[in-house]
Length: 230
Image 1 (cartoon, helix red, strand yellow):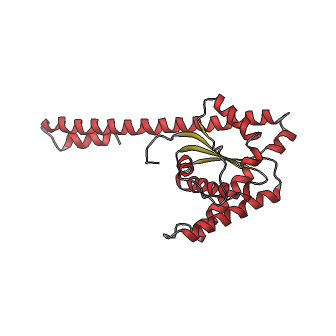
Image 2 (tube, one colour):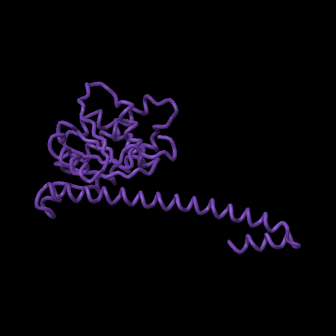
């Protein structure tokens, strides 16, 4: 995505189709759509041996936020792991917000996701010719992934301890997503206003300096004008 360009999607959904496409992800996608959240969800089946397509890479890069639904067979999918590598790259390099969701998996399965990620990263490293996917970067990204999984939503625990059913849990997840998107919008508006204010302020300072040129004290007046605004 070109720097400064507006993201094409609000959310990119990464999930293992055979585990969650017809249940959890379907309900989550519908709930997001109802809230007006423009969400990318790839529903097509992918042939074995195929690598992640440019379209998906672009969709990840052009999304404001990524939601990863970790399920029992997520780590066994090369397709999912390639998506995951790209998402973590965007999290580290572009500060993309990532919301992890653990659906029906235990602690050992969480570890298998991290191990699978390392293997996928190593394959990318083998094909890389510029040294981008090196050992230090793997350590950094692996740490980021582990922290993300540990701090993410655990649907099973949420339903058991806090909510009556999965629907209520999804409702809360959607609230968090919408809240983060709105926070980003506000931050973006503030940055834009700062840029506009700075540009206007600079123009006024230049104009003030020019108008002061006719003063009998051309060197004193401009200096006083600049100091007055610092």
